[in-house]
Amino acid sequence: MERPSRRPIPRPPAGLDPSGIRSGHSAAPPRRSVLRGGLAFGAAATAALTGELWTGRGTAAAAGVDYPSAVWAPASTANYTASSRPTSYPVNLVVIHVTQETFSDTITLFQDPAHAASAHYVVRSADGAIDQCVREHDIAWHAGNWDYNTRSIGIEHEGWVDQPAYFTTAMYHASAALTAAICTKYGIPKDRNHIIGHYQVPGTDHTDPGPNWDWVRYIRLVNGT
Image 1 (tube, rainbow, N blue to C red):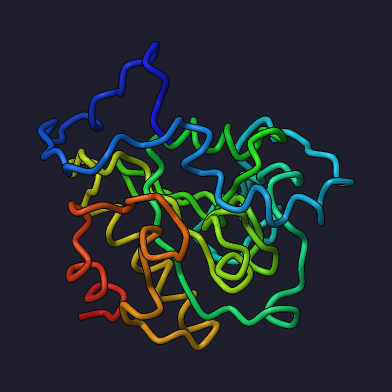
Image 2: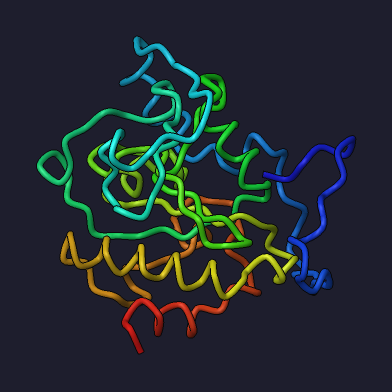
């Protein structure tokens, strides 16, 4: 979700090393295409639904979020498919994404009925705060592959793939705790065969979370080691 040229990419959060190693990947697609995970695949199922913008961050208790530490920030109902997982589809994957956007802009995009994409969770760089945008029983449009969408939980991480300073200790720990809870809940093995990057989804042209994401560290944290 690369930002338009008229808006410069902001620097990493205060106190972080602003340097980043360029990944060598081809330029990311326009911002609306990177998070547009399931646009063609779930649109028909929700074409009759009306998107509704959320004007602020909700509370965990009020929204009945799936993860107790999360805050409810609902995506437009036009951007995901209502379902009853795991009854309707098994949940056996977690897909890791990087937003190519700021945290707040990602939430705003998910709340835009025209965006045609969403993820279940978004993790903030500076402090590891987590917003839940889609309930886990529903199908978020994040993977760009309908089969993978139906059986996965999508987690977005604030930042850019070529700016590793965004991948903070707070973010790694908060995201790993979330992924661990999801894996425990659905009986998903806590390994790289079941916790995958967006780049591993068949048919995708995305590179996230990119070469600067520390998979060894992340999987160790998910497993509590």
